[in-house]
Length: 151
Image (cartoon, rainbow, N blue to C red):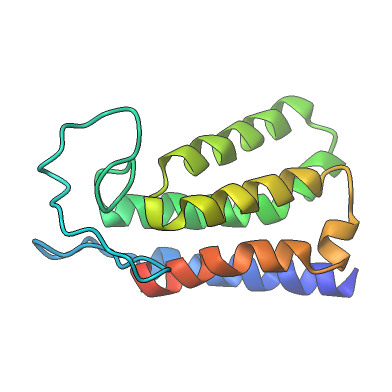
């Protein structure tokens, strides 16, 4: 349980730092990808669609993407606490928000965020996700993306 509390504290702290450090990009700048492959096209060049496009995925700005991704990563770590409170409707809403964010994130983090979503939801019925380190492994690339693109 101590490791779980440490993970939650570290994630919440990181999210708070990411949210306070998240600023709008300067003209022409785009977030870098966590896997090193960047897009050279301008986000304004493509028409807005329901699927993510451009450097910010389904978000209008880097700041909006950073804020949503940091909030949802923190929320993913808190899902078990929401479940323990027995508020089913609230839990379902948080799961839906996490899934929606997973669809909107930039392509450079899409697979990592989808994995985080999957592991966080699995942790609702299998607490060993946290004690085995699976959650920490799933959130690490998301935290790295936040550190790289939102600091």
